[in-house]
Length: 480
Image (cartoon, rainbow, N blue to C red; front, side, top):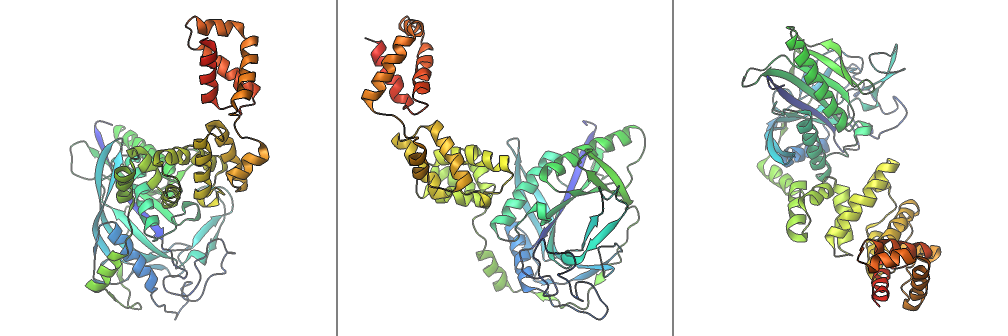
């Protein structure tokens, strides 16, 4: 790899958070029966014309501004001509010549190293339909069906400059981009529903060269992990091709998640889309005042929020990065912080128990039944000594499943710690009587023996003793 440098650019397609399509009134709701959300406009029937969705323009401009782009005050739509079964018109209405936003950037961090990735353009376009393969993948299925519900859904395509150099950088770029789009309300960015899709353009060149090599475009990646793996595989594949004295063919390839390989789909050696201005859709003129008003709607973005959590609440950089990586997570954290003042303890529980249970159940935060108020109440119970930290995890698991308040769970399950001095003294006396050797070991200077004795008391109380109180009382009793 030292002989070559990977040159990677990403084209990210993002479904805008609108209720209707780009040029018609058909619903954009996900998951409806195939071909039930269509009309002559989004099916491209002869004689049909559409009207531009104003909300889509607003969201596209907001995306551009959040990505530090320059907004073009005069923009329009074009026809990009090509044939594919999911494209009913035989052309796509997009922005080829004058996109709504240009010359932006996004800052990422990989292994502690910061990097600025420049963004070439953000343009609005309509989504094609969706091919549904009868069995297997696009490469193995003998038949495919077309659902046009997605045809005409408004997208922005965000095109980076070819400045990424690894799969890890690409993954970091996508994670940051997803967070920004979620924070600004541009999209729901649900990759599992196709709201955020990524194509990766990859080429190699000799280290130190500025001349770009032949590139391949990888499609069909449905997770950030898949993007990273696909890029890493494709870089290695192209190295092998070049080392064997062959040339890289400029083509579109698909990623097979099961096999962990890319496979050729179609050549892109001589592609000419014959693009020209779309005359049926009016030009878009944006005033400086309109752009400034749109800029004022941009909320606090992930980097700024992370900095605030570090500076104002003392969170470590790592914690703040995890918390702010998702808008819902950041809002959950700050809502909890309003009721419980220890930011570090909150982040420990969010990054520990909450994310662990979400991952184990394959759930999003919004599906969890734990509320910020519930977590704050649980932490207060632990601070008071009502329950131990270990018991708190058990209570949290019940809260996650059932959504009940921690006080109610503790009471019903009898989980309150035994802190009564007289009762603990009786149990400690019994443990000392039954374990003369560990007692003698501790009294002869073997400090670790106290841990065994504490464990025996905890076992006798079924974990309901206060560990701190047990430790202190044992030491006091054995010092006599």
